[in-house]
Every structure is written in structure tokens, then in C-alpha cells.
Image 1 (spheres, helix red, strand yellow):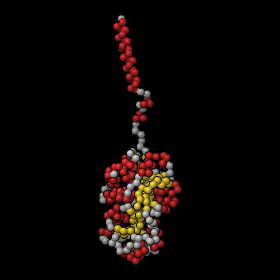
Image 2 (tube, one colour):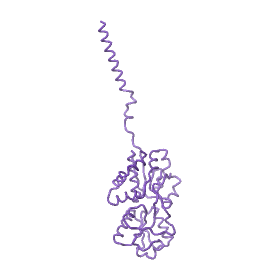
Image 3 (cartoon, helix red, strand yellow):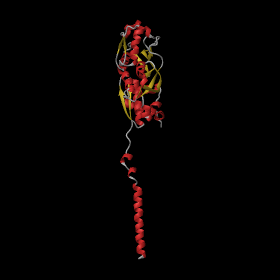
Image 4 (cartoon, helix red, strand yellow):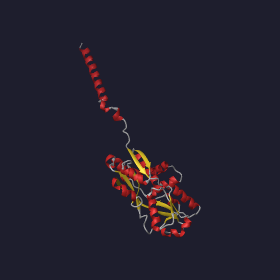
Length: 297
């Protein structure tokens, strides 16, 4: 009888221990809910940019940096004026396409009070009238003396670009007998390429950094009236409130900075036939330490 009771007691203890172990493994319902084990949705950022070769390059590099950091990214191409308005209205989060202090001054003066100027992302930029080096003048105030050789035409880019309004001012202030022909960044580059191939004279609205200075022997025409200003910088802008609402995304924007040679390398790859995504990915792959620094790793 005693032995039978011991056996029953031992079995009961075993069952009790099993129940305790099962309960310990199961945990509370809040520790195993699907909501907590599922991946959180990625934070979104929207980047605006202008369709200049330089800004196509930089914006797509920044897009891939944000994606590498785990963000969902939308990029939106617009003209310069609507871009500034979109940032001031909070319709896009940021841009790295702001050329200051002169090129886009008209838009900064209008919208700047409602925009966060985060930092310079590139220094040493420049805009002006550009010609092949074989052109036999060196200054804007000489253009009228050889106007026929240029067909009295300045080949421009998008009508809303700051450099276009600056060129209209240059035509007036210098009294140039020239017509400014609107085009696009790609259209201007194509006309320049064609003219150089045929060794014809051409004057275009140009800027650096740009792949055309790496590919061709070009020069800026001197600007004694300083219509185009001096050295430019490219700025990163953000909508007001981004720093507080998306501090991680803002911090990446704060750290994004590169050199003209970086931008030109991406532009050259695109111009040489590489897709935009491939060219941006190539730069990111070649600069892992820089990318990690920007992400904040």
C-alpha cells in the first residue's frame, strides 16, 4: 500500500512539473501576438528635384542611400519654382537641388521663410554662359561683335530654371543682340555635343559640376557685370517640421555632403549609357565608408 502511494505521488509530481514547464514556455498572450513579431512598416520620405543632369545624379544617389537605411523613397521631378513651393507647402520632405545664393535667389526670396535650409551638400558650383574653348572671344561683352557666328542664339534649358532668368537679365544688361532659346538640360547638352562635333560656334547656359566639362574642352565667358554672381553652393532644403517628425531621415539629410568630382562621376556614367539606377549604385558601392557615415552607422 505504501509503495502504491509513493508511485501515485511521483506520477502526480511529474504531471505538475510538466504543466509548469508548458506554462513557462507559453508565456502571456501579449508576448506572442503577431502584431509584435511582424516587421514595422518602413518610414517614407519624398524627395523633390529638378531635371538637371547634376540633380538627377545626386537625387538618385540620395534615394538609394535612404533605401539602404531602410526607408521607402519617392522622388518627384518638377521645375525649380514649383519645387520650392512644394517644400514650403510640405508636399515634399526635402530636396538637394537648391542652387544658391544667386541661381535660385528669386525662389528663395519668395519661399525661403517657410523652408528649412539644412546645409550645403556641395561647394564650388558655378553657372554662366559657356562656349567651346575654340571660340575666339572670352567675355560676354564681346558677344555682339561675333553674334552671327552664334546665329544670334543662346541655347538654354528649362524656362523655369534660375539660370534662364539670369540669362534674360544678361541679354538686357549687356545689350546683346541674341535670342535665348529654351530647351532642357538634355536638349542643351545634345546641341552642344553636335556643335562641337561639327566645330561650330555655340553658346549655352552652363554650370559646374557637369559631365560636359569632363568630356569637352569648354570655358565660361567672363561676366564683368557679375550677372551670374560668384561661386555657388548646392543646398539641402527640408520642409518645416521634418526634423521633429522624422528625426532619422533629417539626420541623414544633415550628413549628406559630397564633392564635385563625386557628382561628375555619376553624371559621366549616365551620359555614357549606364542607367540612372546603375550609376547611382556604382557610386554607393565604390564609397562604402562615405555611405555609412551619411547613414550614421
